[in-house]
Length: 301
Image (cartoon, rainbow, N blue to C red; front, side):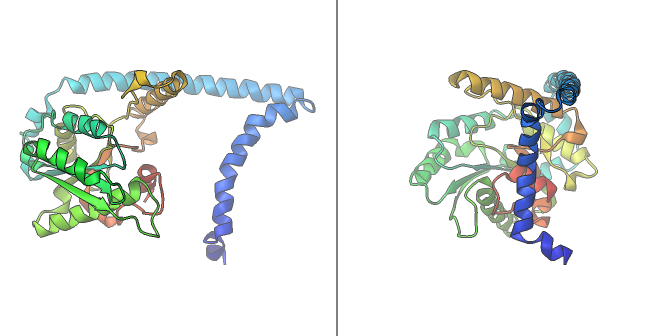
């Protein structure tokens, strides 16, 4: 009985409503409660201010720690350390760029950053351009990128995702389609899924030069690597000065928060651009195709 109730649309909708209603209840509480219980509202505001101050200080401290950690690791030549690891040459990197109607120049900027990487074995890098079939210019973009940058990767492969009736339009359905075809490619070429690293890269992401070397090094050293996601903080400074002032403020605050999470491992959930192995993705049947926020969702799968 309880299980059937939980699975009903009414119960699921109720859970969806509880969070925003609770948020608005707390936000508006000082307005409608002040005439009746002003002292209670005053205590509530003081308690909230103390909580906010505490969280702000802890976030600022974690942000500084994370920033120093990034500076430290950016000085390490991981491509040299990687070569000391046994069997590192078996790792294959498939970089999936899900995109829909992204300007060609933006897509090309992302690829240009990828080819600057210092990964020692270029032939182990595969670029996957995951287009939507309904995009008219997709094949034109694919040909341009493939012809211009094919010498920098083992292969550049383009897929065109046909949106089905039971799918939600977005990253999840797009990259699930691409990853499943990558999985077939891996099987056909007798590769081990545990040695296949999938990196989901947004069309406007700029990965640091040592991303794949550092990722490979940590992956090989990680005893629980088959069950982990690997994520670098996404800092929203691409095209920063072209944005309106208030959007820049939001981007800065969001970047600070994401940077702080890097040194708060218990709160760390990957977003936007991240990596994991194909074996794990296959185990959880990739991303659910009927949702939009695929990064958080796949973490809890």
